[in-house]
Image 1 (tube, rainbow, N blue to C red):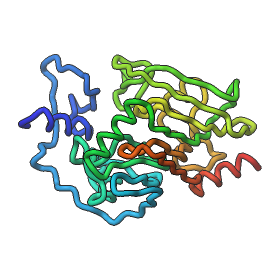
Image 2: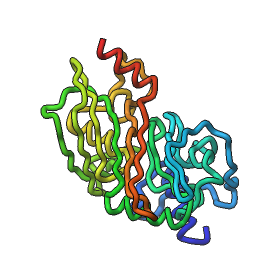
Image 3: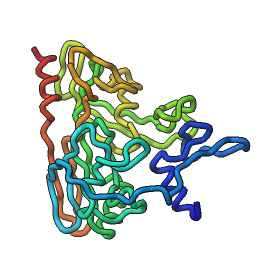
Image 4: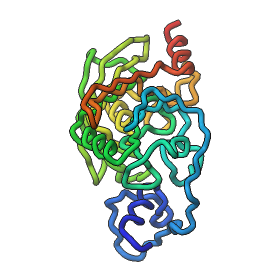
Length: 273
């Protein structure tokens, strides 16, 4: 493939398989495995696409986009087009991978809400530093099955690829990374609760895994949560409603909020009735 960077890009896009399965980046080959990947030369150049995107904040250095549910953030295996990156081409820049220009954090495909994107290399480095210092405030609304024992909670439990199923994240892992989630009860229903969740760290699927681990699975989550017919949802009830941080160049506060999408508002109304 020619370089370590090319290999990193393949792993980042989940485009390399070992014996037909995705493996964690830390997985070590023991010999005899079959490794399959699509050569970089066969990849099509990214093309800008006209996608419906709401921009909640923008200046010359960065923008905050309100991602709809169902949209993947960056190209990956099975999602070569129609991603947030395609919709932002020409407006975002910077980053270590060409498939992720300006992306410093992400949202799952079926999680809606706010995402900050760098428009310059300098802004990208500054935003990455904010993430490392845990100075990027990310708040979510999550509807869960169950009622918490207290109004507020803190979940601290390392997360990594599940040791038995590498397509899932888990507390049962050989590659744990520190993960901390805070939550506060916003509203209680008979058998459900609406939580205001704040990420201290940003591991893959962190909120979904942590809430499931304490017996409060996210409604509509097909992997870690529960299918709840009463919600009448075709997606998980998880929405990134607030993003706040000091501007990476000037230091002035940047704050953006996103209202609950109509389908999530309708789900709440059904439980309240």
